[in-house]
Length: 387
Image (cartoon, rainbow, N blue to C red; front, top):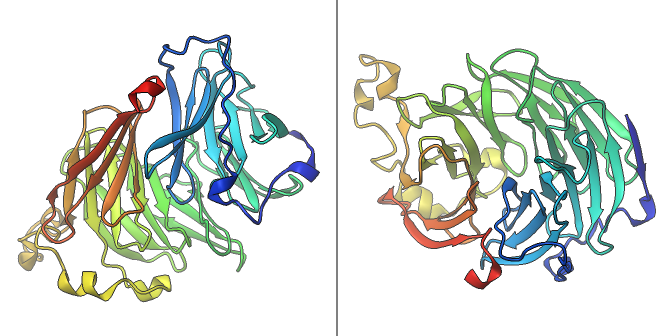
């Protein structure tokens, strides 16, 4: 493993404010502006206010609300980016090369400064990089069986973690307060949680089958997990590892693609290959999270009738299937296509990104539930004239 960087220009850590994001375009003389690129990866930034799209020709950065392209870098043929991650809204991004013709090696993480339009640091590994997570103070790099945590300021290794085989590069970090990191453990179905402030490690046996997806709240206090079966999603307290709630996506097996908590952890969104995005009502004690939810919402709707199965009163008699909680609201999408979900900044809204370039913004009715209302749709890969 090797790394090189120019620390003096690495990052404006203290002030990643919206106005810092570059508005310039790269002159793409060597590419056809009408060509629709192939999407290789999408990721929301840490507060879901923006998202980054990696393509076989470069990358693009978008604002979610209102929807607009902020900037793009078109590297032309041979410019494949396999992973791209933003750091809030500042000018620093992390890339890994990808696609049939990668711009950078697939075993390197490149730290890009968009003010300078160049890479200002790199981290090299002996195997393919499967995932990257950024915090203001740390960079986390995920390999097939290992995770490295680096200091952002000098790229020094702080921690190495061994995991079970992790081809999807599963790993999540908290973004407010002290760092909490969740990653696969060394056993099937196990999640390892690192609390860096208290130097405590918690192992949570979340499922019998392998972990397919998980999410952390911003403060890292809650963890949502799904297994390769994809029927149930479980919510745990990361401090003591206790199971707080279990919700049911459906009866059939499904591949869970994405899990997301709302800002207040009142709601949980789930997307899968079945094509339906579900929103569940979480009944976690908000005191645990250290912030008050607005009284009105929680009291006027103690348990939406759709959220609890109507058969829960005969819990003891029926199989568990009937007593787990079902989603409050749903939004239907094409089956089999991968979608990432996040909560919008407006009340009760969801943002959905499809690997076909679809951007949806939907709203759910927190009291009545049911089908969500589509507020907006764009294809963010099409030439700009369509916006």
